Image (cartoon, rainbow, N blue to C red):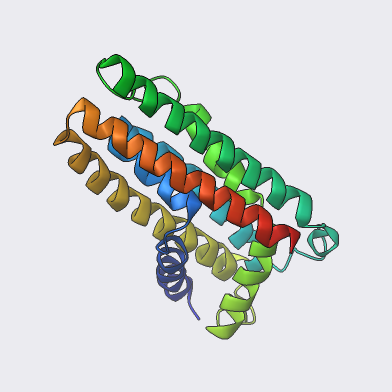
Length: 213
């Protein structure tokens, strides 16, 4: 496999991993709808960066060397679930406040892009089992074997492709969400904030129950 092949296959894999809708995806979409393209993309970049970290560990076979297999996934996953619950609760409270006061609507994420990136990064990173998932996907698609003499180029290209594929999905989702949000009034945006917040809270509870089970 050449580095170009690995890059293209990694991009396809990154897109496939990012596309399924879950609590983190809903979080990015909500921020794009209520806060605009930059707010949504900031969260999406954090997700893609975490995917890159896990892809590097899986592609270079670093899991055992870093002691990832010895990490108990319970507490990181519970922490991620708690953070999603907290974000959802905040969205519900902001939405209700807008409906009650009749002001301009949910505030955009101006000036907090760095916090959005970090939050989404930590949320995605909170499940160490993702490394095993990437390793299994690489092996299942025949992406785990590096040709003799290829050095680090193939696994590096593979991990880079995962990042680009994941980021590409978040760019598209953020663009669609922000375009939709521009067509809505303040009260409609507030209702979306409430609905998305309730869904995030439900997702956080589900993640906590899954981790504890």
